[in-house]
Image 1 (cartoon, rainbow, N blue to C red):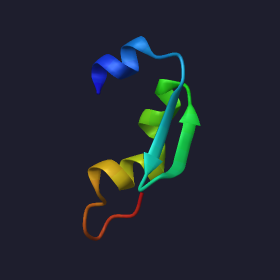
Image 2 (image 1 turned 180 degrees about the horizontal axis):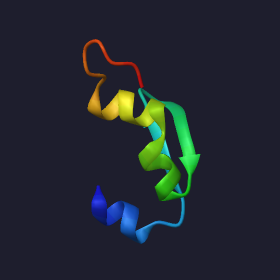
Image 3 (image 1 turned 45 degrees about the vertical axis):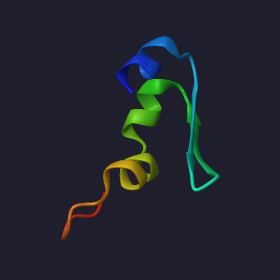
Length: 47
C-alpha cells in the first residue's frame, strides 16, 4: 500500500465495486470510509 501511495498522484478506492474515495493519497489515507472499509472500526469507537 505504501508503494502505491508513494507513486500515485491520485488514488481511487473501491469497496465491493462501489467507489468510496477518489483523491490525492494524503486525503485517501484520512478518509473515514476508507479506514472503515479496509481497517475496520474498533468496537465502541466511531470514526
